[in-house]
Image (tube, rainbow, N blue to C red; front, side, top):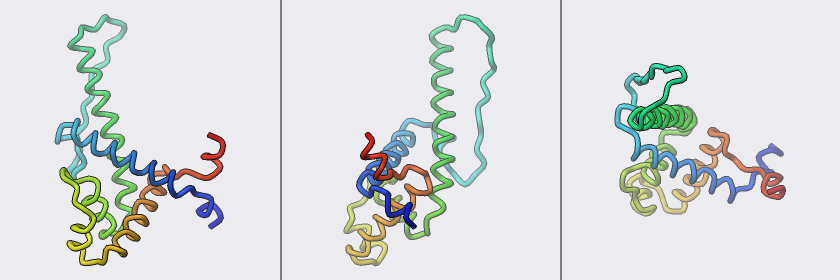
Length: 146
């Protein structure tokens, strides 16, 4: 438990909110067939060309494929951490950060039938757990040495 006590709460919250913003960015810039779903994922295997000069179209296509592969890797990692949360914590994170139009805190607390005080406690705990699951927590020593 000493390890948990040495985590910088504010820096960790900033780190997990950065990951959630990255999720939203990938969500907006990635085609639907690559976005996380319950159905099987499809991958795109590009043929490798050895040592040739690429046209602008080929370079753009390669850049897009790299973006999609990076997005797919991010979603896979995010989902593994996300599903370590309880169902209510996942609902809270989705409504607060991941929906197309995120809801206000009071709307979420009403929808989940919990008080606003409980909502804020659950939200902080869910973000903390997600940060630990995704390994983006920040320790006090890291902050001091920066």
